[in-house]
Image (cartoon, rainbow, N blue to C red; front, side, top):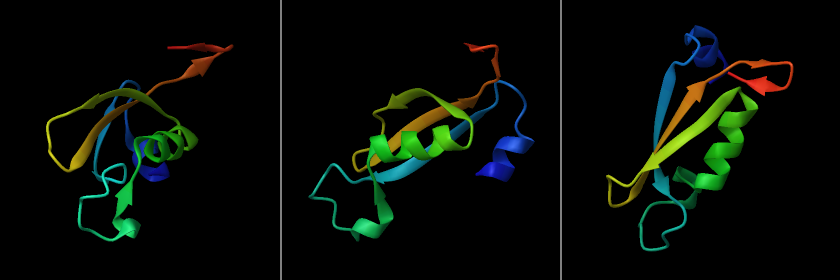
Length: 76
């Protein structure tokens, strides 16, 4: 993700579609699922800011992040 973030323009977006770990009825190995909290934490670590989660898919999170820049404590 670090290289993807480097390639993004300021304001560029990344969409992650991840199997929902919050739903125990999704029959896929835990290894292949993520919670929204986990996704947000990992994307924040590479410099992406959470924008929104869309509830479009029955088993997956559709999470949108954007690249922002922090200047003197203010996010732009």
